[in-house]
Image (cartoon, rainbow, N blue to C red; front, side, top):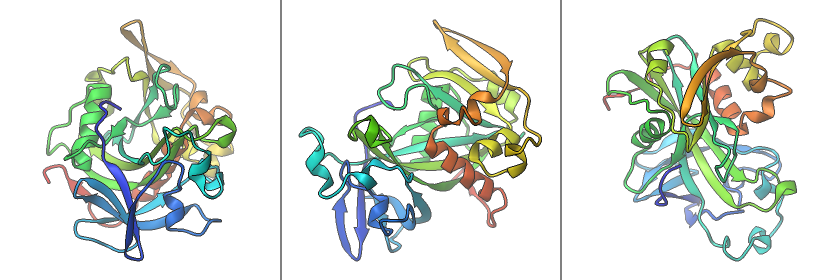
Length: 294
């Protein structure tokens, strides 16, 4: 998540617009208190990331979801009253994360570096803040290159928006009051290249990434909790390739998929599981994805 400049989230419902604030649930603006998901129109509009209950020029319809344990859902009213003075009034930042799918069906996940201030040592797709005057796809491609060294040329991939996830850190009130608040746009990028060719170009940034792994569909389905046969002992890969970074060097080894599956599933972020569920649904979705030449 390089850089301090970032695009902030605004919400519009019933014609009234306001900036989203740390500790106030963005998802809750669009759904009843007992629910955790809503369909919204979203897009970059005049330097802000706008979420609306009605379409606007250039907007995309997407599912917005929060975890049931979302701290903003349980803070009470007014939520800002319990926050430290330095956080009151701070805006919610827009972020983008990239599910890079190789032509072989594998998807790249990275383990966040242990020194990072949010979600250290958690497995996620590459991603970070959207910067001012930056579109979502270029932001995702920039973060992918900064974190993994992978540069995707135009015409070698297609892409689509998978969904939006409201992310707060710490992720539960039992771990402290919210300090960081984002709406993450998950993009699926389907590469025309296979896993081995992409893997050969990996140059992970040790300041942001401590490990990388290309996971095959059976493991991804089990992580997402969408394949009953995987949960009940069906076919899941016996080993996965994990590239570990240590002291400026890297090495790849085959390991059991335990870190990605229950009971180790908590090491994969809730937003990543949401994105993988959306990815599973998108595999059979009608309509073509966007071309990378657009």
